[in-house]
Structures are given as structure tokens and as C-alpha cells.
Amino acid sequence: MNLYILSFALFLVGLYGVLTKRNIVKVIIGAAIMGYAVNLFLILVAYRSGATFPILLPGQEQQIMVDPLPQALVLTSIVIELGVTAVLVALAVKIYAKYGTLDLRKIRRLKE
Image 1 (tube, rainbow, N blue to C red):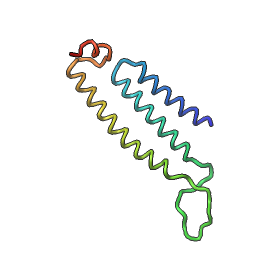
Image 2 (cartoon, rainbow, N blue to C red):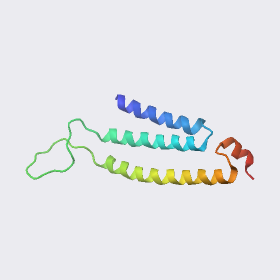
Image 3 (cartoon, rainbow, N blue to C red):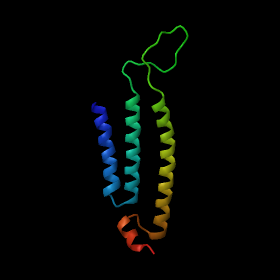
Image 4 (tube, helix red, strand yellow):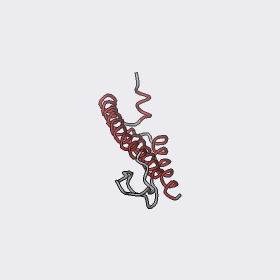
């Protein structure tokens, strides 16, 4: 149960970074932390204490197995998060090239 609370706390740290920081790079890092927290939560849901890998071998009796679906979802999520982070970083680079700053308050005042 403590691990679930820690993953929720990690999500809250990322949410805090997204909502309160004014620097675009810090907002991107906060969004990435939120994604990592969700991935950690999905892996924790799939974990079974004392379970084996989810492949039934011939002559083997039925055992408690780890659920493979959340693991596949996390692998897909990691790839999607990487793409989203790359797009956000590219957007931050373009904003810096146009406005010369990464501060969200200054960018709002400079928009045309």
C-alpha cells in the first residue's frame, strides 16, 4: 500500500510542477514526472507477490502469474511519452527562438 501512496505523491509532484512553474522547461519536466508516476502505478497494479512469468510450460501446474497486459501498456506509454516530450521540447526551442525567453508570463505579454 505504501508504494501506491508513493506513486500518487510522485504524480502530485509532477502536477505541482505543471501548475505552478513559469518556465517551460520545468513544465515539461513536471509532465514527464506525471507520466512516470502513472507508469509506476500500472506496474504496481500488475505485480503479484511470489508470482511467476505468464508462460505456461508443458507439464507445469497452474500457478499464480503476473498480469502481462499492464506491462505492455507501460511499454506503449513510454514510447508515446517520449514522442510527446520531444514535441514539447521542439516547441520550447521554437518559442525561445521567437521570443527570446522561456518564461510563460513574458510570452503571454509578447504574443501578437
